[in-house]
Image (cartoon, rainbow over all chains, first blue to last red; front, side):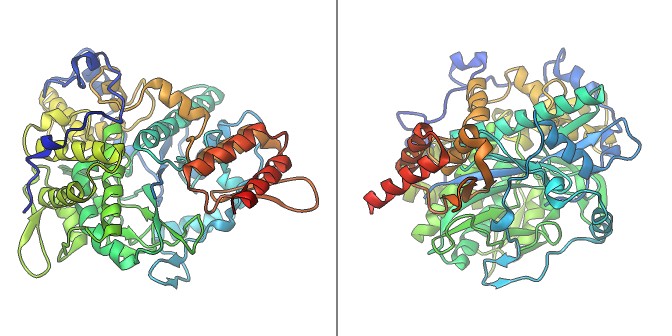
Length: 64
Length: 508
């Protein structure tokens, strides 16, 4: 079994991908949410608006 | 050779009618993109899904009994095949059309992961804009679109990733090298799903799993896509010079909302194809790959193991680590995308077996699970509560004011690989280094003179002789950029084709 624990050795001097565009980019990485506590004023409000029966009504035809 | 693209079928709903006809709604949605009338220009002559890469041709494709019944109704519709499909080629070289009952967006061919993610996101915005226009006509937000793969009643629709590969690689080598990787790819690219379902078996609430599509994988190899779906699709439809190329058409993947997951899905698959080409792919054989896909998907703790041929077991993480290790050894330093993929692949696998919370906003199945667990705690609901399946669905709603993923993105919780400016640009022009960009340029410059268009060629009107731009072997970036300059400077397609013909003669 091969291990990946040495992946830090492979850090390159550049990153072809742009950095995150959120305000957190100044901190060198994406904002890491606190597990178990989505923003209660925004996200939970949005989740509570979802009709509990929505998936039961959702019907599609088979695609590919 | 690096060239890839993603085709995504979207779920569509309309809430102001008792009975919704998805064929008509998908047609109307695509047509809503247009400011003028629909012109039939898509050329279907390059499409033949009956050719099998294993060296034979199937007489027909399978569909289930329900679709057989729908097909009888479809045959009586008062519009033609062209009208039903409503194919559009967008100024960015993408294809936007009604794939029978789902609006589908296919990115233009991309050469870099950054482009791929930007063009995939451009598709989300293009479809959302079409929905907004459609809803203005309907007088309210009645039409909603979902970038997911299931309706929680046993109906699945796809997100296919495609790769140009050399035909010199035996198909058997692709199968041997890819299947164990694809079985375990869901650990990094699964979109997450509440419940378990089957095409003929309905839906059972409860268990959370990594993948939306795993339940619908029924065989290891098949040319079919709507029934008896395979881990590795054998359709031989290269959309390129058949003597030189294959188009690997993978239908096992989920539609990702996280940019990071999209990039990892395609980046890692590309590396595995490179390994196969070099004869350096890990040699794993699973006893039952189809069962393994489901076993791994249904274990969010990532502890499950699957049986290897010849004895012994292996976990999904171990499979992924073996592929990462082989890729790191053989491919590190090849190019920027390779190194980004190797680094982020390793980081992801490490976090999956450690602090998984750091993958929220990067991997869809982890992000969705985190949302649902939080909600279930807050609202005191169990996994069998239908509300959780509804939240699962709404995670994929592409309306930024409603979708749960976009709620996270608005909060800055999601890892971005693109900027909004990147996406805006990707909606208006194609990649500068692939034929997808040429296709888009033809649409922007010479729309009125296009007689027919498809992946491999563009045919222009005018004159007695056909004027065809053949792109079946146009894959070198320098050649693409040269042709692009010719098209930009020509006063007509005829002038462009003459100049391009002279240039090619000179090169020969």
